Length: 116
Image (cartoon, rainbow, N blue to C red; front, side, top):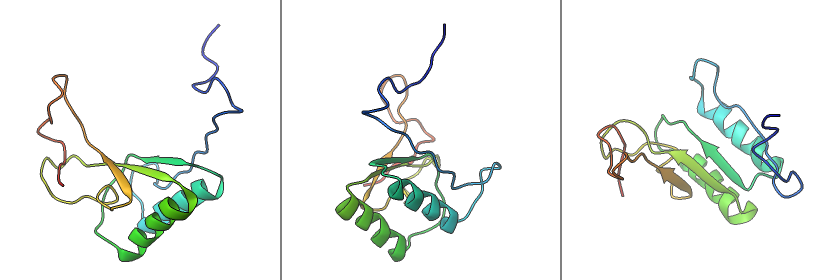
């Protein structure tokens, strides 16, 4: 009795978990990008990151573009919890899907990041 997996058909869906941050929640852009590269190298088609921080990097933008265009990878990242319209990365890169919060009324809560 119990749950064996969130994945009912391992032949159809596979998971690869990579860690880009330390246990404390801090880390470097290099470690995050190494984790993303590991996911792509292991066949990931969707990468979900609940993290943010740092500024824009053309090198990183180019890498995410390459993963999207050439590897068919959808990268998703948290919009941020700053409660303003500032750009948070990696969520604000053109080739990353930004995911923000909504409350029980489907409204944007005050803490949720937002922008164009």
